[in-house]
Length: 253
Image (cartoon, rainbow, N blue to C red; front, side, top):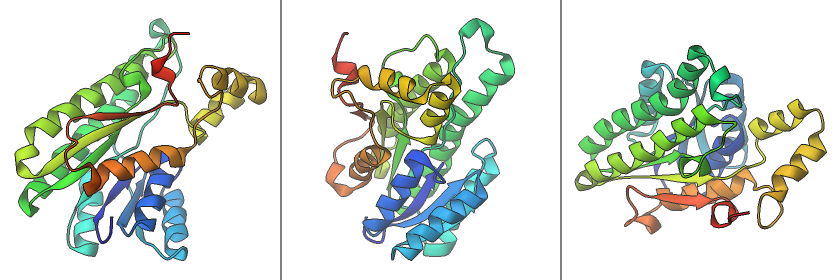
């Protein structure tokens, strides 16, 4: 990623934080974008203190102008946009028949519309400059379903479909678009779920038991896959996805 310039959304914590840190460690110049402005600033400072290059950018992905501003920050700060990682996402664990229209809109506004706007405006800029790379954070639930996460599942299926379409549509412009499909990772989102059950250790053990290796993945393991997809080492991967799920989708029981 030496001297590559770009944006990671949802970069104040979890997967996004590790992606931003790894991109910077590999020589990238990173706009750390997040609705949590203080968190984004903290991650950018952490990267800078470690010798990397990063700036923080407040960004609510449900606001189109804020996504555009994040992309333009890369251009104004470093002279271009080489990569975008659409990572920001939210989750709702609720049965379909109990989910409100407002909750549905919230999930799709963040998980789908935000990725759509990110891809759209990145493509417009990358096409003018000769190409670039987009990596979207999808999910293992882009490929299977979870009865307790129906709307989240639908949103992540949409991210995979959008990824494939963008990759195919703009390949001739030198733009690649792929996604990662992580399983459960030890992020603040998952930790909040464990805490909500009232028994963190039991919830964690039950989740780990679903995986062949009997352990929960770490955010840096997803970051490494994103780094590969964003690099020239993945130059012939386009409109595709990479599972980072510890073998979850390869088993039946």
